[in-house]
Length: 583
Image: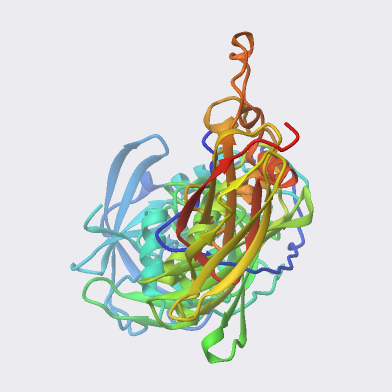
């Protein structure tokens, strides 16, 4: 935090305006943090040790719609493993079936339960690309059940808790975002994402019905008008309302709170690389609470709180029609910030429908616990090459700081980002500064600033500053755009102070200069301090930036004027200090 200079200064700048409404899903929350009881499937099971090559059985999976079908299988081999929570891996071969027209396994079959002699042996989990898709690996049910040996970390409102050739037979997809946003999310999350060929389905209802083995399941990271999810299959359920699915990890993040939904499979598509299902989540049924190497486990009927987010967009070049997108993000402080940044960036691209130069006014609003009145930050940005990318940089950094701040639990929390964009270069260039040649201590200084909008006639603005009574030596006036040679956080940069609360953090973020500010900064020589006082801190070293700015505005040595344009440039003027006539 000592390095919290929120100096969001770039080659280009923008402007923001905001408004936001949030609400939180209902929660039926058992106590979090305790070890769960052993998972006992409702279905009879068979251990991998009892399997032999040539034994036959079937798997359950949805190929189209919502009803699972039986596909015949044969045991190929049982391979010993030497992992902490894995003792065996089972190789099976899918036998020919009139029901399966893709020639074998497909992404989306992860978790499909496999039975021999009517007993559950495990779940389909892995296959090989560019290979025989009929041969796949199965994670034994005993190994999958061990995911519940770790404690859950359930979130409650008001609680402080919070291989190159191997393919997981599941598919993590994104819909409703631009291609480069998908690439950015891939990099941020460290996973492979596919752009889904279908749009997001909007808000998802909640249902307390139970999963059954073989049902299509969707694990959600983002849902609503934007969707990021993985499609898999339910493996097993228990009488206490828990379930197992996927047969491998989702993101391998351990104890999690990821909503899971019932899904509809539109079609299963053949591919030489690896066949895949196309599916859509339809209704939220529960929450994944464990995301481990061998399986995803969770609870039906428990609905985790989530982070509601809104994106409001106006293109001023085509009438400024308001377009609103609403979505929700998993309640994960570390993952949620990256997801929000990626989604906002992608929505900017898709709604504007172009890339290139432009000016954007951006407003971020945050509401949540300990933020009863909400908090807002507005800024203006201009880019000569890619305003869509530049416009979301500062909001993304702020969201990251708020989500990761160490001071207080702020759930429930919600975000709203408003963007007004135009292709027009809305930039004011500082062309001239006119000041009197001299002044005396205590005088009011009249300043005229000449500003030129891009390729238009200049405009003139007048300001008054005050020469301090204790001014000596040279007086210099600097007129500049916000973010250029900014006032420093001397107390933080020098290590004399530190951020110690959420309120202080937000105050200092907002103290950072905005790109649409015209700043007049009057500096002067002060009388030297006596030798016995030279070890004392200066006023700026004793103050936060927000305090320094407030004091100097009161003194009259700092003036800040906001415009609807980005202010660009810097000019200096020196003023001779004459003695007062009385003296």
